[in-house]
Image (cartoon, rainbow, N blue to C red; front, side):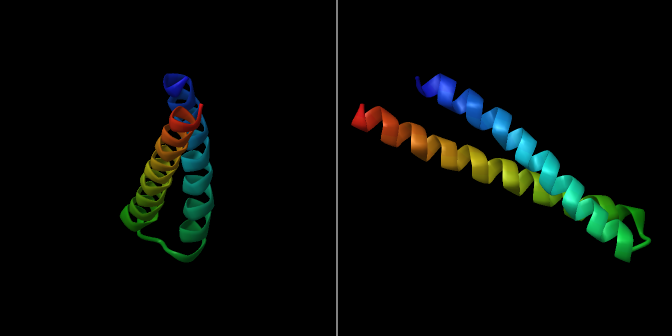
Amino acid sequence: MTAMLLALGGIFGALAACSAFLITWKGYAHHLTDRKKILKAPLQTAVITFIFFMILTGFFALIVKTVF
């Protein structure tokens, strides 16, 4: 059960990270011209979003494991 929850968290975390990357990239591309800055900030946002989702999924899996 824990492995399934972590797999789902990975899938949805990746989708959230892609969405965060695209939203941030569009904003930075609209206002900046330096290509390195345009890619660096969205990549950082995507990584942080993925890590957040995995930590959240880990806590949820831990709660489910202790309750059930």
